Image (cartoon, rainbow, N blue to C red; front, top):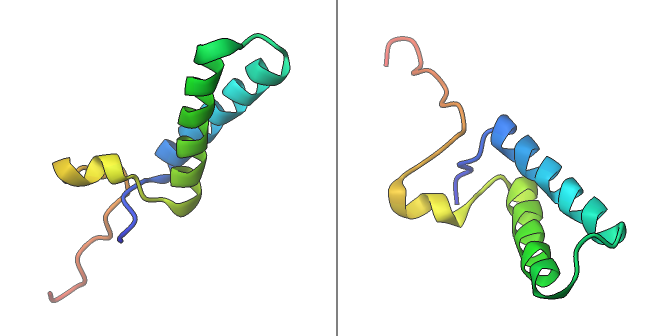
Length: 73
């Protein structure tokens, strides 16, 4: 399971998690919307921590900077 998320992607996802949490604890979210956004926030939190997004896999997508090839390779 190689990492496929870059630092910017992970940071944006964590900021989204913080915004959703702030809205929830400020009682601005309720009902079905709150549940859906909590699930999204949990998924964003987990993928940000581990640095791997399964949604990127089918498309071969990555936001992680690739290391330049070694000299002489």
